[in-house]
Image (tube, rainbow, N blue to C red; front, top):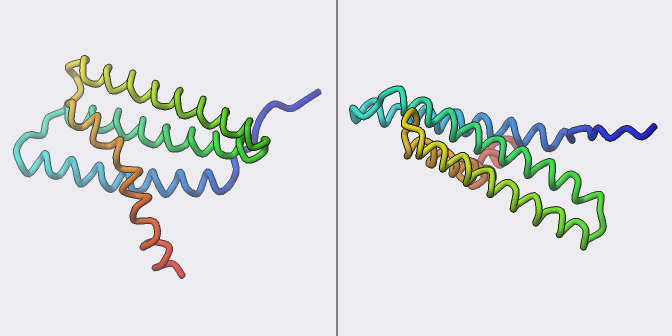
Amino acid sequence: MVNNKMKIDNVVKKETKYIIIWVGLLSLLMQSVFLVTGFWDISVLLGNILGAFVAVLNFFLMGLAIQRAVQKSEDDAKKSMNVSSLYRKLMIFVIVIIGIVVPYFNNWTVIIPLFFPRVAIAFRPLVDKGNK
């Protein structure tokens, strides 16, 4: 019997944890800005939770796609990554639309956390430099 369960690589786990920490810290910073400026309400928190969840999920799914792709031939890996990218972008699009349409979410706090993983990745060389 073939075991179809794929073990999540330790690198994927480690990098996802790194992204979770950064998304959490940047989310707290964003919440603070809304609070200090007097624009905070529960929709800010709910939108932030939705956006942060999608940002981390997108990063994790990308990590899994890369993990699977490195085990394939170059052409199959490219196709697999393209399909993964398409589905992840579609997921983000649908959730952002839901976040905008549903009045329980603040539009900005749904969208802004989607950029937090990029910020975390940009700061990665500084974090790694400090750990050496």
